[in-house]
Amino acid sequence: MASKDCSFDIVSKVDIMEVENAVNQTAKEISQRFDLKGTNTQIERSNDDVTISAEDDFKLRNVVDIFQTKLTKRNISLKALDYGKVESSLGGKVKQVIKIRQGIDKDQAKLLTSTIKDSKIKVQASIQGDAVRVSGKNKDDLQSIMQVLRSADLPMNLQFINYR
Figure 1 (cartoon, rainbow, N blue to C red):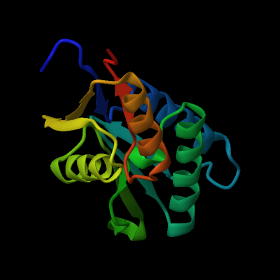
Figure 2: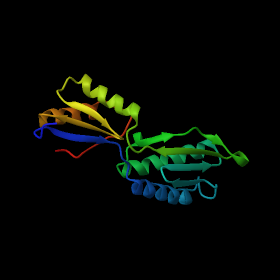
Figure 3: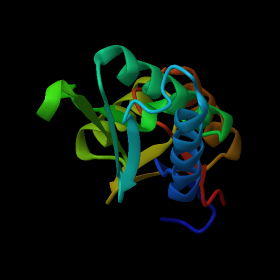
Figure 4: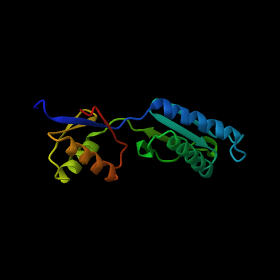
């Protein structure tokens, strides 16, 4: 690559501390809301998973809504969430595991590179682990690619880093 090329990386990262804060705020709201207080409804995080358990589907959906609101207020994209199916557990309770997606997997990277190619803007996109590097001779082209990707309504949360 010639040194006069410009580039940036596309990544999909979530600030886990902000997720932890959203989980804590949701747990606090569960303990204070009259419709959830004392119902043995819980939310907990371990690594990149958030588990919500409740007495019934309705309470589970309420907690998911509260959690999503807390994440949105903390600028965490809901596209970073991967919802597991609602499972029945002991005593008629229900639970759901929500995975926090970190990084761009191979299928998402292929979708990104094909979106970039389809734009007909003169840049190169290469997959580098869980990121995609976009390089080109012209900074305006790179800015255009960022706009294309922002408006493409992709199924993932994106950040643009290492812009040089």
